[in-house]
Length: 398
Image (cartoon, rainbow, N blue to C red):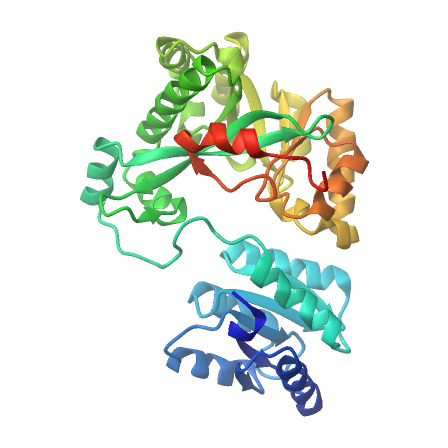
């Protein structure tokens, strides 16, 4: 896609600023442009468009419906693919708005400080054209409980793998297994469309077991090819309430010929302390059996420090919301630096998720991060493609 092929909507209450944005877009060759002077009018236009815009440029400080409320509506109703915040407001507020949009699942191209210039606008839009895109379709779809049960039983839900690379030597050392539903017609359904349904149907435990077994089978095949990688698998929160989980996971892994020491179980912050006494017991037994334990999406929960002091974690994963673009956002960088410092003091390995650019890579390397994961290295791929991805990976800038 080129800049000229983009569809853009400008939402700005100030007439001069809106005309300036339209003129700059024209200079960049963007011809499919819509404009609105307020959030309510923009929503009305978006509802009537045959094709949702690629990018919405929005000012935050507008009368009536402000830009923050507007972005919330756009994200929840899937009325655009990405957003650029254009504002002269405080950097901390802009960062909060971007985090909110990310949480809704809306791609954020960053914030552009006023006054708007051709160079600033070009950088933001080029990020959409050349930046990472989802590896799967994101159109909403209706899925019934019976359909998802049948998909799980038919092994249509399989692990795809995203490589993890050491900064020190740029060597691929592991992969994270991520659930993908590949339907009979070849359509790939992202987890955001079916994980919630699996949870409501009480099938997350079945999914966890299925992913663990399939991933171990793939790992064994890679081992036979001389490709030795650690395996990271997300664990269902309900596992931490089951006394049988540690024994079951050990049995499943060893039955596939894999050593538990080569498997890292990823646990989200929000699930760790749901049942503190039982959860701590389960995790202690998992460590006793040799499994690694990773605290996933670190920094997104509310009790990170308490959990790190109580749980026998071996790895900390810095959430992609803090990593992506941190090289140009001081507040994000500060969170990354603090996380790395804490991990060093607790003797934890660190994996930075969401590494999307050479600038992200260089910043993390400079700060002494251990391992990178993100689209700069590779999008998640099926098991059969992992050896090829590993063979062709090169350090950025090499």
